[in-house]
Image (tube, rainbow, N blue to C red; front, side, top):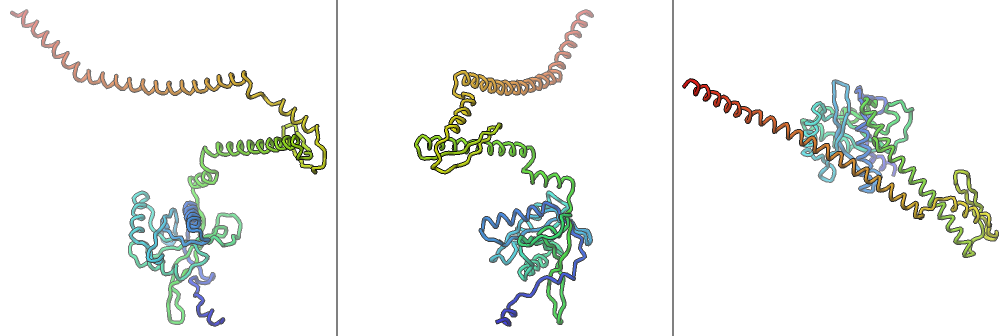
Length: 354
């Protein structure tokens, strides 16, 4: 049984860790975010823990120095065993029009380790001319336990980069991957964008945080009011024993449910009554009139601001129309008037000579 298992065991597609690549790879934050988003989206859509994810890497290469800047998704065909090359070429050309300096430099996937399937897909990319002579493979390993300190190196990210090479063993050769180290490189604009994304986005972050705080406060107030209502209802119906209730100076209500056999505490009822008496009467006629007046004032202010803006726009339009009309009269009307005056002056001179 062990021998059979050994025969069917797949040969590793990665060289031992003692062999390393000489590439110098710089990985930017955008590819990390794109690959993670692609994997999570497929995971939720297909309801599988490890869906097969495939995409292309865009960047620049200068000798043995590679910079991964962007990514885009790829499409598979033939039961997910072949890459749709027409889609790859079309999407690559589209990115080339927007980012002329970026080239296709490899592809990415999600897997614990590279396998023979990845070797076959990698060979398709190499054999199809026009892509890249030595493409890279970037793998996201979501099940990897992260080690190392947060110093911006590859040891604290679930990513590994590989370069294809040829292994010659027992007078035979095969394609394998060799691991290449990488560093995370960020520019000032990228750091700002990542920080903006992590915080939820720009100026809306403070508003969102404020609204969440307000929602939590309203929900807490609602829960406590509901407890008081249930207590008073239970006391009236005689189905509840007693609650120990403490009101803090900031109107925080600390409630402790006591056993049902404890008699009703009239002190709690008096505290609730005093709390209700201290609240403003929201249904008072005077309050309603003041509220309606302030609401109308706010709406009137908004209307005046809108009218002022519309008036400014109309004023600009009138100024432009007046400028255009004046220029046209200068070009046409003024010349005709001058010619008419000259003709009339000549006629008067002729009459004098006669």
